[in-house]
Image (cartoon, rainbow, N blue to C red):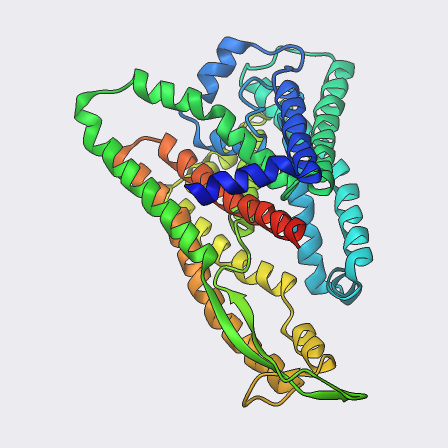
Amino acid sequence: MEGFSSKLKLIFQDKILRKRIFFVLGALVVFRMMSSIPIPGVDTFQLERFLSDNQFLGLLNIFSGGGLANLSIVMLGVAPYITASIIMQLLTIMSPKLKALYQEEGEAGRKKFNQYSRLLTVPLALIQGFGFLAFLRAQGVLSEMTLSEQIINVIIIAAGSILLTWIGELISEFGIGNGVSIIIFAGIVAVLPATVSQLLFTFEPAQIPVYLAALAAALAITYGVVYITEAERPIPITYAKRIRGSKVFGGISTYLPLRLNQAGVIPIIFALSILLFPQMILNFLGSVNSVSIQNIAGILLRIVEQPWIYATVYFGLVFVFTYFYTAVTFDPNTTATHLQKNGAFIPGVRPGENTSSYIARILTRLTLVGAMFLGIIAVLPLVMVALTDVTAFAIGGTGLLIVVSVVIDLIKKVEAQITAREY
């Protein structure tokens, strides 16, 4: 406790760190104000009835940072930007130029790559905004509008999503942590009091075992995420001795830390984004003026919403995206090249291609454990829903995963800033 209070004191004594924290808090205040401004023509009673016990819209509300609950101007949240990021990173597999831009051209290449993602966000926000508004209008949540009013609403919510993405980018640059993740985190935390009060309002003594099981699962998820996130596999590294003039450099031993879960919470966010997209399309097709299309969309939607199918696909996507994101962000060939250039080697392993293969082999095994764990933790709340019929557990479990991972990342970033200031 003493160490925590001393670190807290260091945070607020450091002028630059204090400014960064206040910038994040200010940006989140602006975001929460935007999420309370509804678009025109909303039937609040119909909206409240429609949102209750709807897992699909509950998950979408997570990505909107709570902005969907009252159909605010930021109802799409950062979902279009996340979709654009997924598309761009998938394109790195097919395009060597994009892969080189992202992995080999340093900070300038990353900035250019991110700019392409932002440009792709604009048409995706317009398409998603149009489809979602058409779906809500068919459900009676929005009143009938003229064509010009519909166009204005689509532009408003697309602009709201782009503005929110820009705020996230500002948090990443002038604040602390990943801005997009912090916005999602803030939205989950903002709806927490309402969720707790709803559970207390509907509390029945017969449900005590269910609540205790949910609490135990939440603690297990929190512990598991922290443990796996912090777990590392050290690879010993030795620097060769070099003589410059009368001085000897190198000859020291250190290690290369490989994290068990190299991808963090990104696979969960990517998997949810992919899962939500077909549901959004099918919900939209179910509202068109064609009986045959409505019937086909209804059948497909019932198949997609089958708990065991949903859980299986969710687990598979988390598993695949863990490997995919690890491959995109960590390249064994680049690491082996850097080690060789700096006169470092792994004892018992030849520099160059052999070192690259050795690191890749260890990374593959580590990622298997991390991907399995992340997939199991992701579907655990869905298993609880199947056993208890309480849909809030699925949304709460997903939110808990994101919250714990973002908090861990935030603590690490703050500690890194404190360490840098001390030195």
